[in-house]
Every structure is written in structure tokens, then in C-alpha cells.
Length: 284
Ligand SMILES: Nc1ncnc2c1ncn2[C@@H]1O[C@H](COP(=O)(O)OP(=O)(O)OP(=O)(O)O)[C@@H](O)[C@H]1O
Ligand SMILES: [Mg+2]
Image 1 (cartoon, helix red, strand yellow):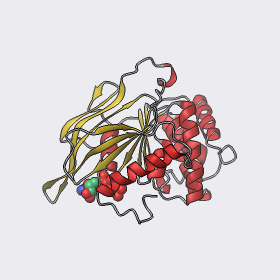
Image 2 (cartoon, rainbow, N blue to C red):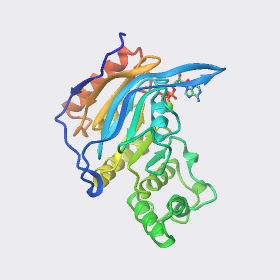
Image 3 (spheres, rainbow, N blue to C red):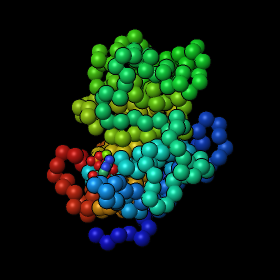
Image 4 (cartoon, rainbow, N blue to C red):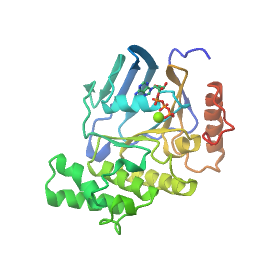
């Protein structure tokens, strides 16, 4: 399809304005991704992955990156994390241009092996707090508080190999939230879970995000997950990719509601334009 000059913004539901996180008064965008292009070196050649991405994330917002496999979702997330440099455009976080990686952006990945296997659940959450200079007593307090928030208060002394996949992802989320990041960057964190566990964790994350007002940039393959968890969905398409459309889905948390179905339909249509096979199990 023709490349969009600028992504359209469409509203499915009335937008809700999320408040600034934890007492800050700055209501400008926390993250600005501005005409960003990113590529990789392959056999001495530059291969573009993202041609043109523009979107912003305000404090407390939950922004979902949705697109076919290979559309550069993880690439954009890594660039926001500071691990990849854009070849064009700007990434600005909290007013800072092209930031280095830092604990202000906490990552949660899809893989279950992101925990330190030799540390207990509590040890896994305490560790990054200690590294960032939090004293022992406070680190423990903060870790316990966030593990309790994730329903893990009975597993503080367990080791990762003693946990289910869902529990490991809960620990990873607790660890990410405990360092009180500016943004939580999540790359298909529930992608490897069974449907039931995935649904439960989605609901819990939605609740925790509402309670903590954490700012979320979340990569997903799943339309329903995007509508359920997101305030806005940034739809990527093309190769190298660009932002196809940004769809407002705030307040849609009941999959049976007609507005939810309407958003699902709109996102399916956008992805179908990208030639994505919607009969597959991926885009439910
Ligand atoms: N380290 C790398 N070296 C070279 N090319 C890469 C590298 N990582 C990603 N790519 C390429 O960049 C493009 C975008 O990849 P990316 O992983 O960002 O896609 P994605 O949307 O996250 O896909 P998926 O849904 O499968 O995770 C793909 O063509 C991929 O092959
Ligand atoms: Mg990916």
C-alpha cells in the first residue's frame, strides 16, 4: 500500500487523559519518536528495518506497538531503550535527546529466562535496586512491596527454576516496577504463556498500571491484547516499516462490548492491508 505521509489518528473511544506519574507536573510528552529510521548492518550492508516512525507517549499513557512479524516493533523498543541508534530522526525522553541506556527505562521480555537463576525471587528484585544505589533495607522493602503487588508474597525465597512461566513473568514485572522507572518497555511479555495465564496477567497488568500510573510502551502481536491494555495503538506496516495509523482505544476493557469489537475490527482491517494472514493463530 502507499506510504502514509503522516499517520492518521483515529478515535474509537473518547480519550481519557492520564495524570502525571507520582506527583510530577510536567504534562508534555514523556517520549517523542520523531521521524525515526533504524537499520542493521548485514554482511557489510545497511538494511533498513524502520523507515519512518513518529509517535509520542505522554506520562501515564499505555501505548501499544502492533504490527506483523518483522515490522520493527522490537527494533523501535530497543532504540527507545537506547540500545540502537536511529539512522535518522530523533528519540527524546523526558526532554533528553538520544538517551543512553539507563534504569529510567525498565525492560520486560517475552523469554522466561530473563531472571538470574542463582538468585531467589526476592534477590532478583533487590539486585537492580542495590546496583542503582538504594540501601539494603529500602531495597528489600521496595522489592517485597512490588512482589506482593504481583501476588508473589509466598514465593520470595523460591528460585526461578521452581516457578511457572507466569510466575517468572510476574517477577520480571515486579523487578521492572520496583526501580520506579520513567517507562516500562515490554516486548510481548505474555507471548509465551498459555491463554488462561495470559488473560490473567493482562488483567493484573491493567490494574497495576492504573494504580501506579506507570507509562507503558508495549509490543504485541495480539489485537485483543492491544485493545485491552492500551490507551492508543500504534500500527506499524510495510518493510521497512512506517506508522500506518494510531488508533485511540482508551477505556475499552470489555471484549464483549460493541466498541471493543469495533476497535478489533478496525485493527484487523489495518493489519489485513499489510497482507497479514488473519486466519493464523497470532492475531486473535
Ligand atoms: N540484530 C539484527 N540484525 C540484522 N537484522 C535484524 C536484527 N534484528 C532485527 N533485524 C531485522 O529487522 C527487521 C525488524 O525486526 P524486529 O525484530 O524489530 O521485528 P518485530 O516487529 O519485532 O518482529 P516479531 O513480531 O517477529 O518479533 C526484520 O527484518 C529483522 O530481520
Ligand atoms: Mg519482536
